[in-house]
Length: 465
Image (cartoon, helix red, strand yellow):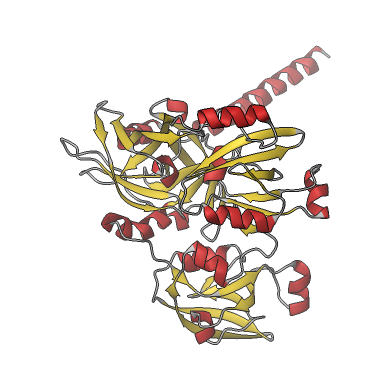
C-alpha cells in the first residue's frame, strides 16, 4: 500500500512538472518587443495644438424670448466679445529624415499653432500643414529639423493577418512615448465613417492622445495610423490602414486635393436568403441597387441587379468592402469587374471617374431618404413614431439626431444619437424643414449653437468646425 502511494506521488510530480514546462515554453514563445520599441520610439512625436475659440456671448445657455431674465442678460452680454484658447494633444510618426510627419486630420484640423516635440531629444519645432484628407482623417505636417531624423518605413496593410502581434505607439493622455502591445482583432471593420470605412481593429491599448501614432508590426514597419476608440470599450481600437496613407501621399506632399476612383452605383449586401434565391454559394459580393446616369458604371453597361463579385480578379467579400476598393484606386484607372447577371458570369471593363465631394454625392445619390446630413458630422430626422419609441422621446416638436460620425465636429462636441434639437442658434426648431432652412442660413459659419433635449435634461451645446 505504501508503495502504491509513492507511485502516485511520483506520477503527480511528473505531471505537474510537465504542465509547468508547457506553460514556461508558451511564455517563452511570446515575442520580445524591446528592440522594436527602442527602434520605433525616436520616430514617434508628441503633437500639441492651440486654437482660439469664439464662445457664445450669452453665458447661461439657451435664450428664451419669453423670459425677461434671459432677455436682459442676453442684451447685456451680447455686446461683450468672448474668446478662449483651447489646447489639444496627439501623436504623429516621422516618415522622412527631413521632417515629414503623418498624423490624423482631427488632431490638427482646428489648430492655429502646431508644436511638435521629438521624444529622444526633447526638441520642439513649429509645424506647417502640407496636406490634408478630412474624409480619410489623414494629415501631413512638416517641420524643419536641425539634423536628420530617424523615421519609420511603411508596411503593407493588405497583408496583415488577424491574430498577428502589433504595437501601438503614442502619447495617450499626454504620457509621452507609451508603447502597448496586442494583436490584430479584425480587418476591414466598418464603424460608420463612410465609403472609406475599412479600419484595422486591435486590442492594443489606444486612448485619447494616441491619435496619429503608428500601429507597428514585428518588423518595425507602420501598418496603420491609430485613430479611433469605442467610448466605454476596452481592448477595441481602430487604425487607418497604411495603404490608404500611401495612396494619399503623392497628393499630400504637393498640397493637392485628394482624388479617388468612382464607379457610380448604389449597392446592398447579399443576405443568406438572397444568396439562396440567386443560386449563390455564399454571401460574398454586392448587389447593384441603382446605376447613376452618366457615371463610369453606366457607360460600361452595368445594370441594377448585377452582382459584383470581383475587381481585377480580387474577390469582393462584402458590400462594405466594395466602396473602399474602388476609392483606394486613382481616377482614370481601367479595371475589370466580375459580375453575375441572371446567374451568368461575365466581366465588364470600367474606366473609373473622379469621386465627387460628399455634398455632391448626397445630392446625386439621394443620401439617406429619411435623414438630413449636415457638414458637422451628424444627421437629423423628423420625430416619427418609430424614433419616438426607439429613443424614448417625450417632446412634441424638434428634430432627432439619428447618427453621429465618429471623430466628427459633432462627436467631439458631445452630440449623441437620440438627442432632440429644439433650438438652433436660439431659434426654435419644430421640424426638419425649419432645421434645413436655419442651418443653410449659417452654412458659412464655423460655429452653431444647439439647445437639445436628452431624456429629461435640457442641454446647450456648441459645435465648431
